[in-house]
Image 1 (cartoon, rainbow, N blue to C red):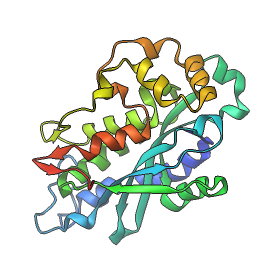
Image 2: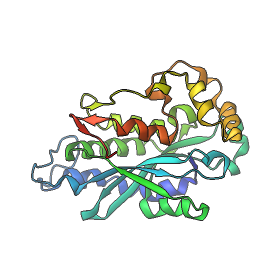
Image 3: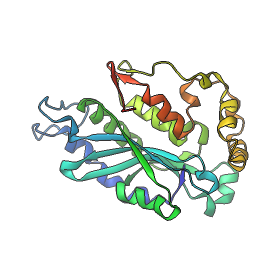
Length: 253
């Protein structure tokens, strides 16, 4: 999770409002402007839109010790290049709001270079994993991201249920026909409870573990699906590397 200022979202929000119309309207009559009603012609190259998972290396600050993940969407032909990820208000300047459970968060669309610049001062690198999806799925994924972006930065801060890895997985699933995606055999560790799994994964960052217990208010012990146990960026990549879409790998191993 990245603590950020609301201004980052506001600077990009208006830009993203026309992105879907641009993508959906490609090679189509001008009166078709909504992604849900337009069909992308078969002759359009799948790389017209490029989708990938972007992972930032762990940092030294308490809330960054497990890394960060988002969805990178590009349309090179029209110079559109954004990273979508759930971010929160800066808790460092709003400690009382954070401790009282009133901190707010939401999906942000951050220009790619600006996103990289947030990690450079900390010496944190990023890795990307291309998603091999049909153009229709990538268009629909962008529409879903745009819809959630319009919700604004006014959701209650929720590390367990809107953490970067878990929310990225759910956004990806929402953006695709779930009948197409198969996760294959889940790693054995996901048979553990969410508390057991998280405690093992954070054994080398005990202060982060204490931080999570403070802010999760018992949610970590609530029964949940395997999908809701995907909390760490590394776990997300592990799960997606074995996933297939219509029998083909979702991403390169």
